[in-house]
Length: 292
Image 1 (cartoon, rainbow, N blue to C red):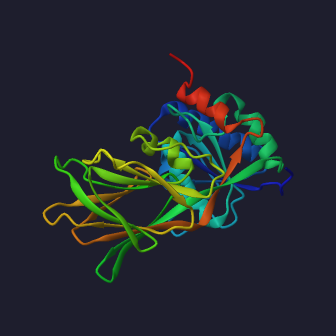
Image 2: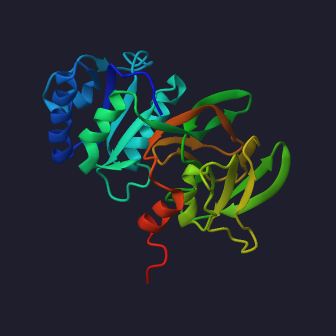
């Protein structure tokens, strides 16, 4: 697909990895030699020890005219970047330098060939559904966060079960006695939800999955619901607290009576993909399907 050529790139790296820092410096030099402006966070600039053309700050500072978010890292870095840039419709190009690398489009061996094509506008994107989780206490909104993979309410380190009253579009479906609940997108169905026994959803589906974590009642099974549904989870355990986690990275403490409303975000993550890659081929390769 031909897109407008790119003149400004925001570079994001997995921190504290010397190999990635070295590659980050090389990548900045490569881009600037081609007349591309490069922007990084203040922390990344400090780690790299090299010059960039601008500092990415809070409140979208220096991101509005960015044409590409370039990620050198693992899935966690990609999730963080997607939450930061999705509302600006910035495409995300990722190269795996982590462990599993399920979300990354390419391996690092292809970095400069792919980057050359991308800045010239030759790339293909897919839109990945995101979630929006609103934490409500009484009549007050405590926080509101986006998520690409999943929204999780869990007990963390407390060695006792929690009770979570759960509704879909204001209709109560269950009160789970469990370690927690995972609400995931199709993208997130191969992450924490899968480990908890949830279903794998094809990434092009408009659907969500609700997966209980270690439910006390064995008949409580994962369910798949329409993507435009609103899921409401309320903590009803009076003597216990729980935690709200977004993509395994953002954490809020939840008290008895608090409600978490989870719905499809108005924004999608715009992810650059390898046009030769296929979802089930990736599953076979990454998850070792068919291997003994």
